[in-house]
Image (cartoon, rainbow, N blue to C red; front, side, top):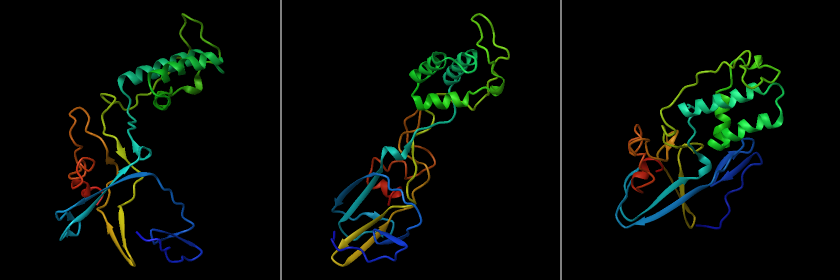
Length: 226
């Protein structure tokens, strides 16, 4: 490493890792975890096989970059969403505070608040504008009844491996030795990089040969990170 400052940039540019960036373009920096390992044997890199000891660098995305969101609803979620709206529909307009909060507490208690909000949105009756203004008495059916949509479904609560997004096109590692600076750019990072096992069978995700095992093997990680 070197303590020498990077070269001065024009007023309309900023410099990150000696790469000029337009100051008018917003930049968002997300946290990652970096692991390094020195190996004595030659390593296979994107530029071929190295001639001697190598430094392996592996980058893990932070939780903020990982999403396990699945928009499709399970049968239980559809049932819970209908139950939520059944109660809210009967409460009238505007509903009393407890009449609106009690169904939400049940739905959010069964799922996370974020997932409950998605379920409620996905199961919003298509005739919402026709919701009765007056509360529906117990033992009677509201007129008109709620007309529920039929959102896409899924067999279980875990049908897709979590994925990392908001990642760069590739990682570039800069090595400093005195005045010498060497840059190594890894392979392109695929969109939606899997960070978990395939549901049901616990295997590595399909369709990403060489990439899915990046989190278990430093040598396989070069396919995903470089």
